[in-house]
Amino acid sequence: MESQPVMDLAAALDRFDGDHDLFLTLAGLYVERSAQALGALQTALSAQDLPVLVKEAHKLKGSAMEFCARPAVAAAAHLEESARKAVVQDLPAAAEQARAEVERLTAALVEIMQKGFPS
Image 1 (cartoon, rainbow, N blue to C red):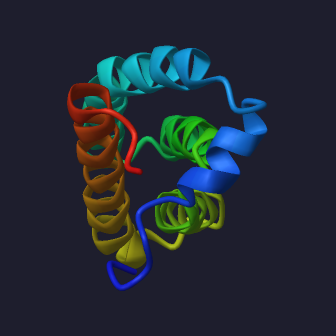
Image 2: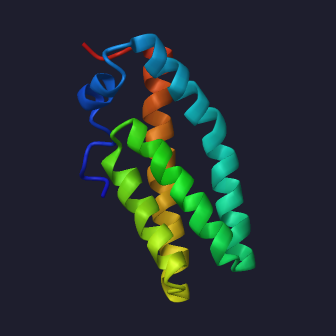
Image 3: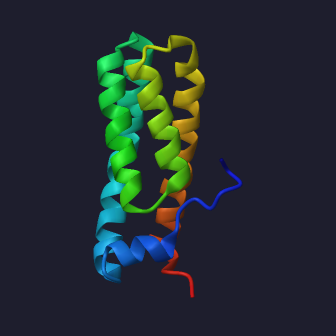
């Protein structure tokens, strides 16, 4: 999935009616909460707690949708579906892919927050 852009920034800004301040506020919240969400995912994966894994993956998917981050949305959706169907053998790889895409999105959002929007 890394060949895809981490997010469609133009589409994301359009979702926020071009409001850069709102985008930055929500980006800050995403960055702040993503580490907690990934920790909760890891805990649920280690405990093989499928209902919690479904819930946490679903929340990550929804948050990534706000930023039109297709790779993160797809990875979280795959993890959610694998947990929902109890395809236990797929969970470690699906969780790793979700973690990688969430971290990639987080890094992109931090860069925008620190350096501003690309021209």
